[in-house]
Image (cartoon, rainbow, N blue to C red; front, side):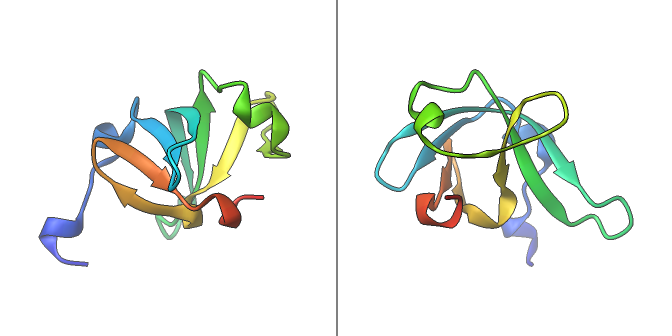
Length: 87
């Protein structure tokens, strides 16, 4: 990954999470990662929308909704996820 492609976690926190088709999921509340490798595992959603209730998203122990980081396809003004990769 080149320097231009790197994005720091503080730049992702608070961004709105949307699907490729523009459906809003909520905001990035936190990021779960593997401490040994640094691999990003999940995005914890904050302020989930009503749309997320229809999806059977995985939840953490506290009941927060999780989106697999592997479904993220773009980071810009929004965090764009591939909906087909999370359901």
